[in-house]
Length: 308
Image (cartoon, rainbow, N blue to C red):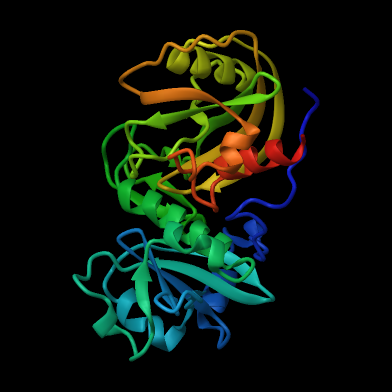
């Protein structure tokens, strides 16, 4: 099997932001950004993002002006500089301490919605910015204390790092690498039904986290062998996708099977099967569903179908 290139960008990629990372340590610059009349804030409430038009099926991100964001900022949650969007400073702010943040905002500002439910419908770039804000605020809320000595941490680098107040250890946002792979044997693809899937009929690609001291190719082979007992040979990179749900990056591959007998790990999967291209294209007719449109799993499957 030749390497199959990605047919189009994955969801949550293509950020319009200039992260301006070299300016994060410049306190005067960050203060000027916060005071800018053009500054906007991406609020995050309990891992949900503020959007309008969700019920109508035309969602769009709502970024707050400094005045509109003042009340949620006063709730005391963490904030961080995300970067510049067409020269406008963009910050994330977490308002999870509020039981209901909407009354703190001006009227008709929309609602806080799970980004995964609408990412494929958002205008270009918006899903990436909201995912960036969500992932960074998730880390900030859960990393208030030092993992070395247990003392309290203080934000540094405009909210993009934390420093221990006791031992001075530096802490940075974590992103856990996970491999996700479509295993094929030529005319068929291997899909599994996970014990964690929200629907009873969805079949998707296999996936798993990379372990210490392991290459990505080794992780692909190990995860497939552990989950379904299938041996894998060649591994071909496809694309990657930020997945801040809560803190991962998905590294996508197509992998060539060297065996086809399936022995599932019941703690990970309820079922796994080989499917032909026809069966996958007519999946509803055959009684199973495919992964959501915003997922790299769906892209791996679709690009394999088109490579016939």
